[in-house]
Length: 374
Image (cartoon, rainbow, N blue to C red; front, side, top):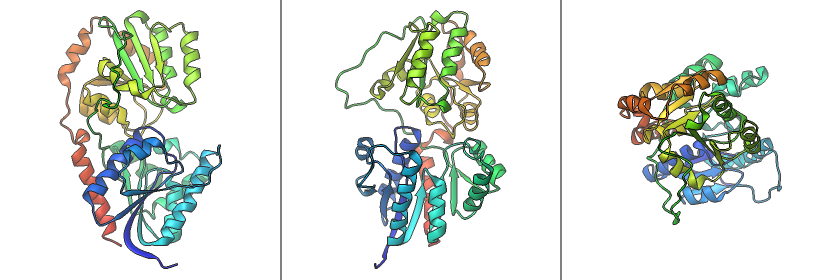
């Protein structure tokens, strides 16, 4: 087979769901297509989802397995995509891999085929590097990468600490939140009230996001009736969260929604955004909350939340994995919202962290540096 000579950017994103990392990928990849013209672009993923099709630039070729089992383990999906990546690397002599997920697999293929590779890491290393053998192998592979991109200063320090490699910090390019123009029926709901402190959490219902901690904290506050909490997302913890609300007798004060179309309505009308995660990278949802000028209460989990709040100045941290600390934080608010009005004077959105164009241009500069070495 004759190998193709065109410059090729091969995006690697095996399991494409609906979350912050996916949003970042779509913004970055679409920006590349529109601003770096002399390349062919392809994406290797397991599922060609409707969300992906509707939001990705049509100049990016989606490569996915045509024959799939109806149910398959996540790791097998990664291996399946690893095979597709191998084929694509063989076809294009000048291919550059840009991995957004499954970095271990992408690094392995880049090493085997001697390809340039950029990896973007999304989760704090302590979340996925506890296995000693895996850590040693990953450290070796990371040393072979051409560029490692992380999205916070703390994240960058952790890469140095865990793997002794240098990483480039580029903040997530978050675009201003827009109302869903495709939804013709204007959604209304009276769950939030003017005389209550209206709380919101948006994220996948999984152990990492730890929404149960918010429910437990609300069950311990002095006056639960002055609060209203909306949890928006989907995932395997959905029914566990519903049962916990029922057990704590908080059904009047907590609403759990797995319909993303209603997200903007609740986000816009909330007073406080709460992040309860056990670990993060640089959580998109906190940047979105900042753009909507919401007060933020966040766990001090690794990595990212502290950096956002320090620059935004309209929020506070509580000790992660601590229901009592979150309860104490909530207890200081009253239903007159006087404290929120006082704090809002500190809002600051002038930092580069909130400048999407600045961050996207950084991505372009770093990509072109790697490509120029081919």
